[in-house]
Amino acid sequence: MSRSRGAIALVGTLVGALLGSGVMAWRSGELPFVARDMCWGSLSPDVAHALFSDTDVRSRELPLRRATEDHMHTECSMQGFGADELESEVTASVRTLGELRGAQAWSWTEQYLSSRMTPLGDGITGMASSTRAWVALPASCEELPYEPGEKPPLRVVTLASREADPEGENVVDARRGLDAMSRAVVRLANGVMEQYGCEGRYDDPPKLPRAPEGNELPDVDAERLCGIHGVRLPGWARGPEAKSVRTTPGTKPGAPPADEVRACDIRQPFGPNRLRLMTVANPELAGLVSRVLGNRAERLGGDGQGAFAGGLSVYTADCQSGRVAFVAHERERDGGSHDDKSLALAVLPSYVKAEAKRVGCGEVNVKVPDIPTT
Image (cartoon, rainbow, N blue to C red; front, side):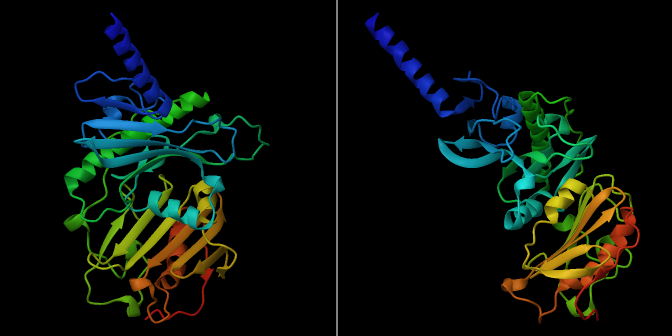
């Protein structure tokens, strides 16, 4: 009897330690020690387990603070173990994008609005890839009063695993990862919305088109970059190297901006050079993009507002639907420039002019420093 009481006390101590540390774990075919749902009660075992190839998943989370906190940023870490060794990790986050400036704003933009990201659709503002996903929380999550016409800051839930732009990912892993991340981020958003007492819930997303990989990537058309008429590579930027292009899955050049974000990456498959062109027609996301360059950046003229620094150019215009942001970003070889010629600046005016018409902004002209186009 004494030994039994001691064993019960020991089990109670272990369970208490697990609960106190915020760790949750389960193994395939075994009953869990603690509550099954992870990350603020949002992710059931099957949804969380699909994010990993391991059989042992554990999580540790920070408290989910109230929606009224402007600097809200909290995380939940899920870790996959094999043979009791950490093999992979997925981080869930809830944060306010309105607080991001400069390098932080650009880091989020580059990771979560890239050409790998597929719009979730079906009335959900969000995107997903095999390694990144995000969903915007609805305005009903706000608890503070706002004046008529005033919009609350954009808050998002995100998921991140591995690198944002994995090289050489096979199509099977890309498909599996996209399916798991898209379902998990919607479930995560629903769980957070329930905790906050927000109105409405999102349905699980359908099977999304994935970004092409490897040999699926088409060759670039230097006369119609990203398939857009009138946008071309300048002559000095063309060369014998083979290039390929990836665009946001499910979007088409010239089509209305139903999904609000369209990105295109032009790259050398075996080199560091890359040009990204991006249109962000969601006014709140466009506001985030407009903050990636600080006051020291060189200003651009024209019908809108913009600036450039190094290989990054950002231009915004106020349209009927609200603010729209246009981005041209060149990732330069070895951190240097191409004979002081900016490919991003050379392409920006024609890109903005063509995309502004597509998204309903009308004629938008950009004035840039003199740059050779031949």
